[in-house]
Every structure is written in structure tokens, then in C-alpha cells.
Length: 210
Image (cartoon, rainbow, N blue to C red; front, side, top):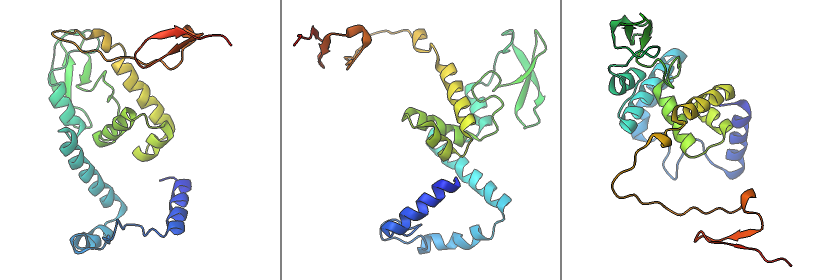
């Protein structure tokens, strides 16, 4: 958390009398939590980060069905084609990160299942990406997204454009079939409809001059 945000949180807690760690009338030191308090407090910074990563991984797996980048690669791209020429590859050991590596049978390019995807060269875990995309779905401001995901503003900006580039023209490639339901579109204002007023039924009429 950034220093400014931490200061605002502390001042707010002081003004309204909120006790940090307390929700409703239940104290954070309730018996069901107290058994872990000493254990967590005894961890050094490295061990605490590992514990937090393990918790986030499990929470992500329970939330979306996969918890790591390797699991995502194995589930969604078990046999990727070459990102350069499209030829079929064969397995070629592991990357330094421990991820399955492939080598193209056509151009001899070495790559992983995440090459050419939005997750390529990603140093953050899948849980961070899941939170980032969730906040994008709610149209959260970029500064807020960066704060919650604990990433730099420039990183959040780059990730957002990676996602946009991934889904670009995706709708144009969809093929509709069977019965299709299309909802109405309400246009509150548009430069192409100047001098007209719109209503929710979709009908437009010219506005009367005074």
C-alpha cells in the first residue's frame, strides 16, 4: 500500500472510531484466528511472502479452476503451434522457470505454451492477473487497479493494452446461430444525431426550435 493511502486509511479509522482488523462485533483475535497469529508473526519477510503466495494460489484455483501459469498453459495450450511459422513443435525440456519448452519442427524456434499470449514474460502470478482482469470488467480506474494488484501504474497500463490487443476484433470472428436475441441500444447523445432527441424505445425525432 502506498504511503498516502496508508495515511488516509489511518486517519479515517481514527475519525470514525473503526478498530483495524475488526468486522462488526467479531474481533480479529477470536479463537479460530488466534491459533495462526503467533505462527504468522514468527515468519520472516521471505517466508511470509511465500505463505501469501500459497494462499493466493489456492484462492485463485478455487475461484477460476486454475492457480498457476503452468496450470493455465497445460489446460488451455497443451499442444501449441509455433508462434512464428505455425508448424507443429515437439517437447524440448524445461525453461529456467520450470515451464514446458517446445521447439518448432519447421523453423527450430524454441518457445513455451505462453509465448505469444498475454501472459508471456509475466513475472506476476496468475492470481494477480485474475484480480487485474476482474477489475477491468468493473471498469475500475487504472490507479486503483495498480494499487490493489500491487503493480506500477506503467505495468497496469501495459497489461490493459495487452488484454485489449488480445480481444481486439474477437467479436467480429464470432459466428451466430440458432435463435439470437438482440437488446435495444440507448444513445443519450451523439454528434451524428444533433438536433434530435432520443428515447429508450430507440425512436428519434427532430427537436423543435424555440
